[in-house]
Length: 457
Image (cartoon, rainbow, N blue to C red; front, side, top):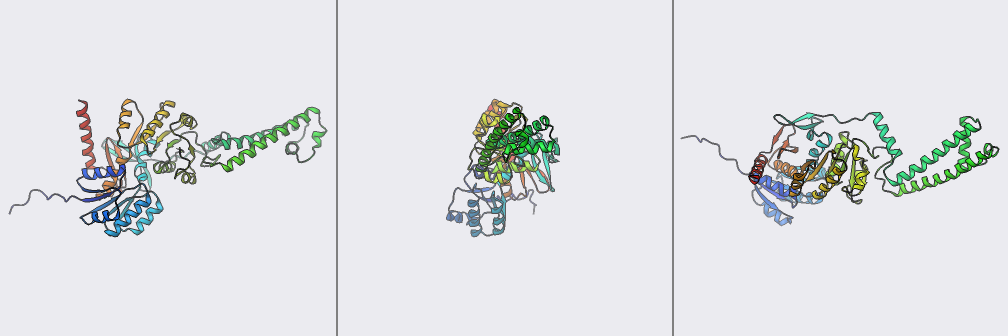
């Protein structure tokens, strides 16, 4: 009997994909390109899920921007087919931990966690394709002679002098109007007190402590001051003017305190939430991706400043709790950008969910500083490609392709934890730090390049 010359072809995996957004479509395409049989359900009810799970399903992928929807769908799947491998997108760490406790065979991923490392890399260093947590430390992904490779990186640690200068700059030139009023009143009152002390010490040969005491009594009007009462006429006029000025600055200071108490106080006068003014990254768009990007950059020692147009956005209060300074306004507005110290910024990342808005933000920022390092969150639309063909708009990251490809790889059994895009190919990073391309994505990228070449001939 003649032995078979080739092994039997591997069985195609059957994957159920539930969702209705752009990343769901990318995940479905990646799975189909990899040779899987994909069943796609868009906004299904429970009976549709039961019918789909009656067949031979090897894994289920649940994708939703709403954690509660993801949780409910995952529990429905687990109830119908206990133990079936599940891949679910969840942003909240609390919801993710509860889901892992309730479902036995689940892999929980976050859209933000999947794509943020590829955005943080160029923000930290323009030579990096992304950053990765490996062996308890940070590593950068850099293009090497034999393909992408992991290289060790060290978080920035500002010196004590730099931190002191930043704090002084924030105190002397606050960003928010209520803080400006408060500091103007306080500094004005202190200036009058110091000036009155110097005049009394110089004109009447008073010891510095006595001069300070007399000046304080005069300014706060707590009682008669014999030194002033028995002094020359010009000193009385000077003291009267000092008291009036101190009264005015006290009123300004009081107004500043009241406004500060009633204000949202998204930027502090001093501390970690103070306005960064040098070597910082401006993150425009405080959604899931923007918030996680700010947190990761802060772990890398990079000062961050978030810009959000919606004061009632769901992540504004969370970012404030994390001591991230926030500016309310439209990121594409030159008036807003002018106040963000772009001339001394390290980079600007436009990561709103609208790629047209991201383009306008980057264009406005480059108009103010043409050598600014810019990053752009984009999808698979043609708008970014058309814009980048006209002029350079910075580093573009197709977040749906990165996230969708990683979701597809995990559904097919890959242990990969992170992904990044390089030369039109999505690469996967395993828990051991190994980097390998998603093979079907390589074929798709080669097809795209060939198609572009045919179209240009």
